[in-house]
Amino acid sequence: MRLSVIGCGYLGAVHAAAMASIGHEVVGIDVDERKIASLSKGDAPFFEPGLQEILSEGLASGRLRFSTDMADAAGAAVHFVGVGTPQQKDGYAADMTYVNAAVDALIPHLAAGDIVAGKSTVPVGTAATLAERVTPTGATLVWNPEFLREGWAVQDTVDPDRLVAGVPAGADGERAADILREVYHPSVAKGTPFIVTDLATAELVKVAANAFLATKISFINAMAEIAEVTGADVTTLADAIGHDARIGRRFLGAGIGFGGGCLPKDIRAFSARAEELGRGESVAFLREIDAINMRRRDRAVDLVVDAFGGSVYKKNITVLGAAFKPHSDDIRDSPALDVAVRLHGLGAWVTVTDPEAIENARRVHPQLNYVEDRDEALRAADAVIVVTEWDEYRRQLDPAHAATLATGRVVVDGRNCLDADAWRAAGWDYRGMGRP
Ligand code: UDX
Image 1 (tube, rainbow, N blue to C red):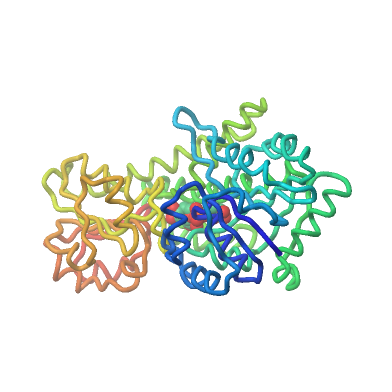
Image 2: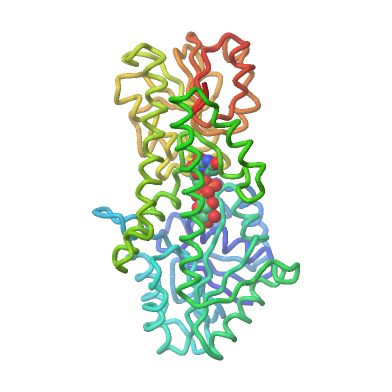
């Protein structure tokens, strides 16, 4: 099938390349000339495992191309819209500028029978409003939310755990659902659940899923706060409750909390939208989820400060990690980088290392000292803090080896990902999050 993908960021670039990899003819469109130049050359503009390979293959096969000209979308049967919906600068609601601009620019190039499939995470009700503009062209607007996790984006796109198609009622909607089934044929054929619903439900599925995940993380972080005043161990607690299949252990990782380009802004946009709808109280708990999450960053900083008796002034602190999670170079709302910046603000000399995110981090926070080599970064550290659980720090860093590099013996485990016993046995003063 011929497809267009409007917006070539973390979502759109992966979607375009993944759709080409399953056999479609795809054009990816973005207004950012540098991004399009890079993608057209076969250079992934960000780190995402597997993307480079499917990008090169797609370009070489002739099925994948990129353009800054919206006119190149003409002729595609399905136009995916995957542009960003960041938090507004002066509030919690989503900034819809890019979605509106993308749809407005696309409309002149639509033909009767085309499908416009929204993928961006949007306030519920957006699709119905966009449909009023798209329908007069004879095209059908549907909502097809994306659940990909950064770091696993290629796999999540090619082999998702469910597909959701929000379509209008009637024959046009049924036809649109059939076309989406054809787009995702390999997944549909292997039995991946394909849920056809109305536009509002499809929009809500996405925000509800992210709200639930954020709630799960903040729940365990709230337990960490209780563990901290009672001497309990939140990791053992998570293991124990996680054995209950109704609860499950995944997303019960206590630590410095969630960040990234999705969960933080999505729960805020959800609260803002609920208030607009007169149902603010229904998701009032999300404010608490957000507050718990932000407190964990304070806690991580306090653990380092306490280790030095109340001041990190002129201390060498090595921060292991900058990305908001491993397998990503994304530093948007990264708790890891936030902790580094806060320590710097308290007068510490902060050295940051990360396998992928240094370039992005340096651009936003040039005041920190960045060192590519992990061991070099550890040299002469008075304290070490792990804030992104890359394997390089979690599994591959031998505490005895780290002790030969650092000057001090304080290690703060902001992700509860280190083997506390092994670090203590190697002479370190280990401090975890919600652990005795
Ligand atoms: C999330 C959703 O998982 C995905 O379905 C949606 O499409 C986009 O938003 P992503 O932002 O890539 O994906 O990251 P995710 O793996 O959900 O992690 C989000 C944050 O939560 C990270 O900062 C991570 O470190 C943190 N986290 C995750 C925890 O603090 N504890 C956990 O147990 C799990």
